[in-house]
Length: 323
Length: 258
Image (spheres, rainbow over the protein chains, first blue to last red):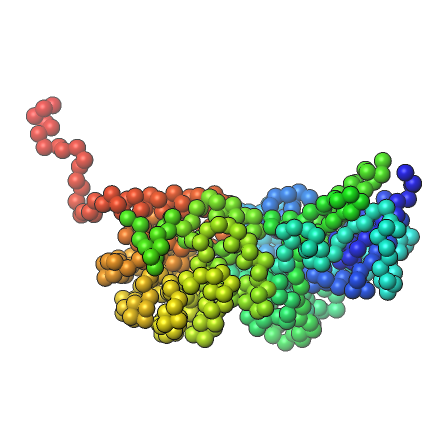
């Protein structure tokens, strides 16, 4: 077969962008389209961007960790500004028992006391006496990362002409569909899981790494980004309502931020975001093939963590079939 | 021996909640292992607006277990009544587990609102399963409002503390001998569920204890066995507690036989 297969990637979220770049790196002639006309129009734009293979094991099956231990390396090799400062798991004093439970279900951490917490995050000195530190984890700003992947795709000779009318599928050897919930009529079992997030600007608080605040009802994480911005997320609701954030969710997220540090009281609320995570019944992302169509979907809450592995899987499938 | 809940005998005294599982597949595995008599499902949180929870609700209905919708998360009578009506429409059942929450920290029921909402719903043909405290007088009011089942808490929702007031729960059982009683909320481990059945309760409702276990399906099976043990023990008529030892082998005369 021809050396350069022509590949159409549909969907410029994290699944589509990682697939487009990976396929272009492997020698594909890649064209990326998104019917929204821009990168990150879906759930990926609202993601936390935590690259946390070991923390996720608290509630995700073991294969999530196994398939994502190299995800921090992948992102660091492909986009600028990947932070490799680990992640910190804390709990308010009265929920400190949750730390033990979290520790029982995860690995690859050290237990930290008040002094170590203060050393890692000076602004939290004296506020928490017990926590878990996952040193090898990282985080990334999802929006910058997706845009950086777009640049990389163009650099590799790929086409990402979002403004044009969608090209004809038949002009391509392969079609890689990464359209999230838009593919729900084709992909059986796909559903949306609502997530809500906030962006705050808070010059009064400095954090170096994502902090997970454990609480039996509403676990929340706070991820630092550039320019004193923090992402606070994210709710998990079995709903496909993409309407605005509810008061209840807003209160839960803000309470967590305030509990972490009272300095958040003066933070400016920059954005309230709502997204629907495309999810299969086992909440595991999947690559499916139907002839020359390949579907990468069901990223659930693991988009940035698992998309490199799924992109690799799709590339193996396509280039394996190319022979 | 099985109680009738509004004329229906359940296949098991275990009622299983469907919230907070790591995935729908794990929920399904837990339901298979628990073999519950009913599953409960929350409408309020899971997409009450614009039927947006339909995908999840369909998964629940496909489990093939009778559904008891609930009004979890409702803080006012009006909210609870509206949610109940929506549940009847979505699930095609007039059963409703009625929650009217009065206090955010303990999720303690607002018993005044609960009685009022129960009356409104019962008059409208609903078969109400009220989540209440173990208070006898409130229980009487709920019965007068039209409830034929009572669901007192064991401990606050999600606390896993077991039966906080065994005396109160026993008194409630004695006070309403013919009324189906369900311990709802606060059960943390299977022995708590067995204890409720041993006290003569007709069922237990469990959610967090299974959903948040490291292996929900395994814990679901443990609860199935526990309610079976508790129900069998109740039927077998347990011995009375006593203050002094009562040796199982009679000692009198033993020295003479020596």
